[in-house]
Length: 97
Image (cartoon, rainbow, N blue to C red; front, side, top):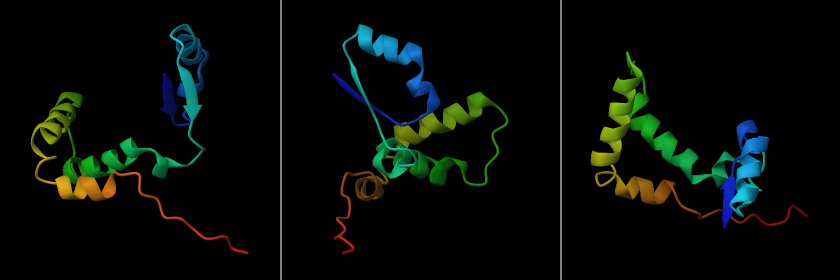
């Protein structure tokens, strides 16, 4: 099995590497500052636009409830946005020379 991770320090912790080795999982790390290669980052951006923009949550439970509500109700309503923003279509650039 292969697992793709971002370059967060906790993903490079010995405990993560040891567990991956124990379960025969090969770890692959995305390049530093390459959030555009990580679809979950795109999803978090959409979630932030829909539930967090200029909103204050008094408790962690209130915030968690809003996230749960987002996943249970919102994706069907915004499937066109999700489909166009969370994908693996990358622009191919020509060589500068």
